[in-house]
Length: 218
Image (cartoon, rainbow, N blue to C red; front, side, top):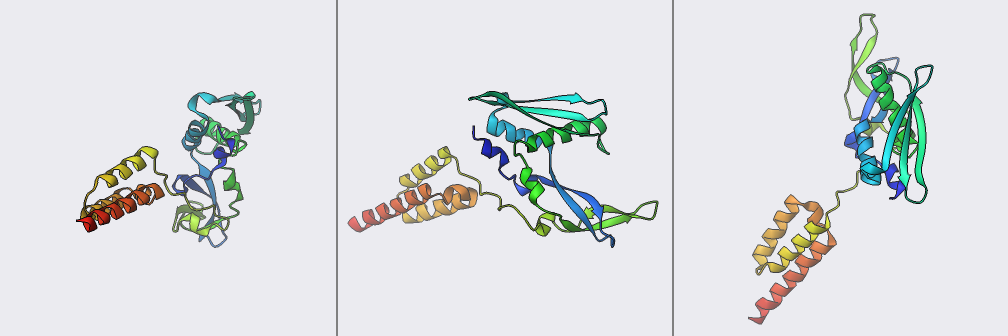
């Protein structure tokens, strides 16, 4: 287990944005980035294994929910980190448990980079409340385009070993230049991550050279 993998940035599509407050003009809102608790659970499953992490909750006398997130370390047994949250405006105690869980996960590094994005004001649409004040309706641009401290672009998907082996073996079975070219174009359209891997490129180049040598021999 590599604990640093817990802190890896999430795909931007998995990051959500909540409007915190409107500007005086009401044309922009402060956007706060957050993660869904299920995506945090998935990260723990992928890095630690489903059997190697656990969460528990207690409620303080003031009603605050404290989540303790424990991860099993082969070298030192269970290691725990805790954080808490109060009831949310939308889901009450359930929302507090989710927020406490995510805050405890931040102590393990999960999603911590989102706190470094800085104040992000994003253009938005509003509607007028019964008190005459504007209320946030929706973003008019992708909040990521307004982030000054944006993390690195989403990593390209990595081709698995079996797919690379299958593509390379298929290339070595081809016996004509035309078929080889057609095969590579089809692979590139269907699996660009596989077609662009050096192992597959090398296989196609090698087979192309072999076909050329065979043609010259005849």
